Structures are given as C-alpha cells and as structure tokens.
Length: 320
Image 1 (cartoon, helix red, strand yellow):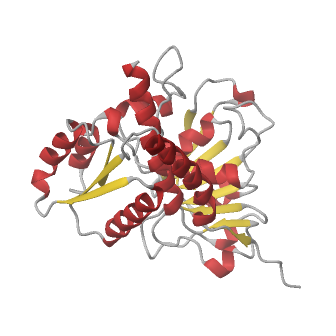
Image 2 (tube, rainbow, N blue to C red):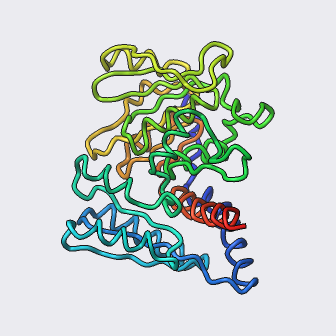
C-alpha cells in the first residue's frame, strides 16, 4: 500500500500574505505625501546565491512601491566606507549586506557597523542579545519592538502559517509541547533559530557537524529564556534518537552534497529547508512528512522589508 504524499507548501504562498500587508502600508505612506522607503543592498562578492537574493529583493521592492538600490563593490576593502556613508544618509531607510564578504571574522565586524536603526537583517548585537535573552522590546515602556534576524523570523512565520504554533496558548509559549530539530548552528540562522523556538516553549535540538545540543526553557517552562545542554558528539545514532517523535525538522546545511536521512523523519512531521541547496530528497520527504517547505527565501525577503518598516516606525516614535 503506497503512502499518501505530504503537502508541499511554497514560500511564495506564505510570503504573499505579508507582502500584501507591506504594500498597503507603503501605499498609505505615499498617500500621506511621504516618499517611498529606500532599501540599500551592498554586494561585494561573486556568490551566485547572493546575486539571486539581490535580484529577488529588487523585484519584490519594485512590486511593493519600495525603492531599492544595489551598490556593488569590486574591491571589498571599500565596503566599510560605503556602509558608513549609508548610515549617515537620511534618505536611506534600510541597509543590508550580502554575506559572505571576507568569509571570516571580518564579516562579523561588518555586521556590527551597520547602523542599528537601519539594520533590516536584525544582525546588530543589541538585537541578538535581546533574542537570546527573550527580550522583545528595546525600551522599558514597550513602545519600540526589537528586530529579529530575518531568516530565523521567516522560519517562525512559516511555522505559524503551518499552524504548528498554538494560538490558544499565551504569546511566548505557543510552541509548548513541540519538539524541533534544527540541522545548522550558524550564528546567522541556526543558533538564533534554535533559541527562538526554545524561547517560545519548544524543546529544540540544535545539530552541528561536531555535536548536538538541547535548547529548552526547562520543565514546565520554568525559565524566562532558554538554557543549553550538550548531548554529545554528533553521530547517526544520536541524530536518529533526537529526531524520534519530532514535530518539526528544519535544515540549513550549505552544501549541495548533504541530504538529511529520510529514514530519520517521523511520519507526519513538518520539514522546512532554509538552505539555498535542497537538504531533503524531494520525492522521499513527501512520503514521510505531512508538510514540506523546500525553500524559505521569499518569506525571508518579506521579513526583511517588514523589519525595515518597523525600524521606520521606531524612528518616528523616538522623534515624537
């Protein structure tokens, strides 16, 4: 007897909901006599994935009435000066950098020189610190919302769309009772995503090439923020064990050769891939997973633009 294939959900279908909201908000700005927001992207590498991402971003902005300008640097050593100039330009509302640039710790430095008030990717240290400590506001009066990194936020919004977040539970606890596995522990996506899910109540297993960690707020969510426990070296046996009964398996391995073992996917789990490479074997995952999202890029762009409008709102509130 053949199993009924799971449902494939395209990122474009999810992104559409948020893009319509953004388009409405931009149109309201224009109707009030305001200029369109300007997003500036900086490209200083020859990575085809970055070029594709830049093209997607530009086309999406154009469709929403947002101004977009791509600034390319043949010599990456001049990129810092370009970012600093955009920081001080009142006409620029949002800044993003297509990484990797140097592919080392210097990239982390570049992330931090982007003005916090214009950092649409949510990579500023303040935003990361708030994320890890489960702090959702920038001020004690709770008027200025903190920004979340756009790819982890995109995965959260996908999980909301898939009804894996439970809206009947209090905000901040809506992943309580869920078990998630995140195969990636990069500082840009994997680790912050595991922290976000754990802070929202899930038991989350963070899988790295070297080891596997457990992120949780403790029994009955007794902690305000997640705690981390090392489970040991990554091995096929341990990976299979942590995947048992998982509600969600999320992959983000930046390699064309990596494929998540289909036999480790529990029947009926939701599978999401945020890598630019397909980490699941399409025909196999559909026979195990109930829901499958093969790419997240278009939702990430929607979150990036949503972040830009939120930053603009924050600036307006500070100016009042």
